[in-house]
Image (cartoon, rainbow, N blue to C red; front, side, top):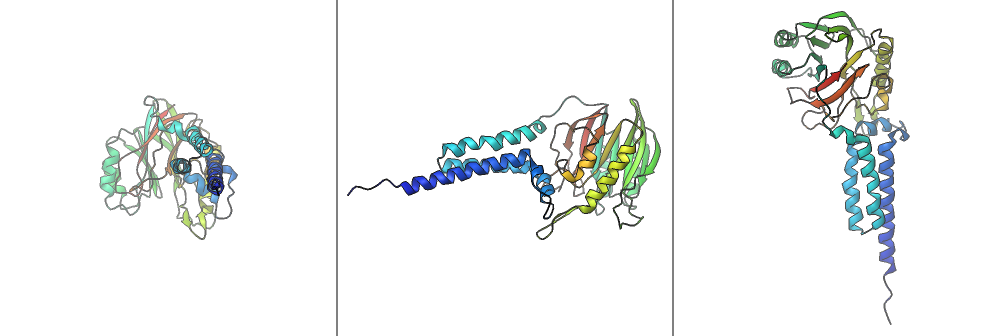
Length: 317
């Protein structure tokens, strides 16, 4: 009796190849259309969008699976998520153009920074025209004033946010981005008009509420989203045409929770500039955005004593 070919093995490999191909299609769709993922339960959509670039790690995994299964269909299907990732994030790999009219630095310096004076000296060593900081405590303020005043004599602080500038400031005022139920002592936003050689610019420095990630609750970002809505109202009411927004927004620009803000600002130029956590950065939650101006390039700077990395950006007015 002759043996029959083992059709079960061939059929199983074919089935596994089709499963891999379907997974490739799913990853590609999620990369291009993350908004299809609903927010509930646990704001899953925002959680995906926060770490969306890392979904590209699925590509080598899927390619390995396709090769192991010797499936031409699955191997070809891997091109879908690879092309989707390149289409969405490939432009961020390029260094960008020449330096802009302004260079700015944004940094959450951490309210438990063990050496704020060293952090201040590190920021002072940059060529930044504007330096914005968050989690600026009263004990740390003298160190920053001493380190930054020589080259940036104009400064303003409101609550725990501060701005140092090479150019004169006027119209300094707090920006109320407090979510409901938060007391008046919570002040994490300021606005100032900066008189630059290129004209007057409104600069906002903000620190949106933190989010929490847990197995039971998912991404807890309700207060952050509410604060983003209040910031958007302030930006929409800003009388100056040119605006620069510097701050710890506690999410990436892909997160739909920040859409009220990002929809009012121009797209940001090349550079991933992951800023958090400092020991192993996986996301840029420290942002530089502009209106009627262009952020041509963003980049992370070396670590300080903070749990965030500083972010530098060039802006063309």
